[in-house]
Length: 394
Image (cartoon, rainbow, N blue to C red; front, side):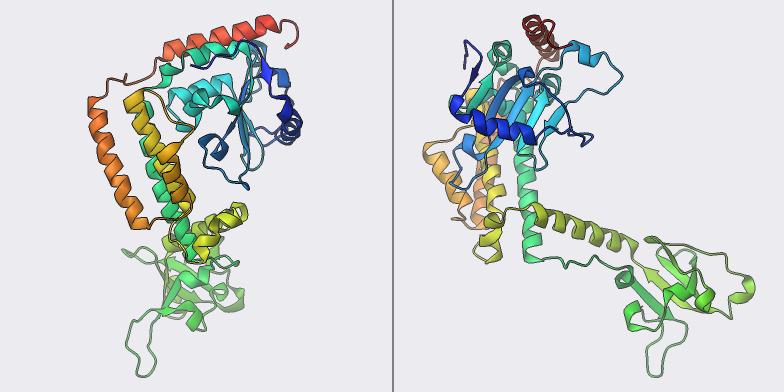
């Protein structure tokens, strides 16, 4: 178990770290700048690929840390700041209270902070040592389940982002008209009756029309032409139904309007998600996919296997794996390099899953962590830090 006899900072990284700190003073909830004394940080470590051993020369350096919330800061009407991060999420600091709350919920990205390789740890205060000493408190069957569920989410994420690579979205957002169809009251010469036409293939101008709902037919509306004095059919992104005078039913009705509102909403969401992904994606990471060299998100698939192997270690050894080496590391790097087909990886995942199911049935790990003990740690660590900094944190 790691033990640190004194507060330490790696001098060779201090300058780079101070640059990071100037860039991350932002409340994760409000988005507003946050003032914070660095003396409140009781733990800080490099995380991500450089901790796992899967990094390469161009890999980013991600940082996570934990800070103390003095008791006095909780006795105000202002909501305590539970998390601070930079805009990209590469640098994240949690309050001790928030950290323990996430650890109790068995968040894999949180639990791993208690098992970091020593060379990754940049800063640790002696008051944090009791939490390291009791890190097994958070190794339960719940931790195993959270690792496996997180791994499964990586598969879904890989599939979703693969869809974006192979089906890029245009810059222009989907338009309402593309999800509307018109059924004329009277068909043209030689045309089959009551056949929906794409609205873009007609001369109908919805701005010159009113609509009323069609009984027993969701997404279908009667359409009435009123000309330039009309209020239009749409209000925002939904159809607004007008009260149509009874005498206009035969004089103004031109046909039926079909609006697939659900499909339009999905298209808008897909478009927004695609361009958010495009804005924040790592171009180098996606080059092999866009060139057709592989048909899946290799990084997400690598994380899936990393989490599954870590879950296996939780069941077998009672601790997660953070730093990989030997054959497991070579396998993860090969996954990251796109050395396997998607089908082969899914088959390997099924093999590991079957192995995990068997181990889970035989596991003697506790079902849940001890919340009361975690609360005791929160109080004692906060008290010890405040005793050391008496008069400096009010």
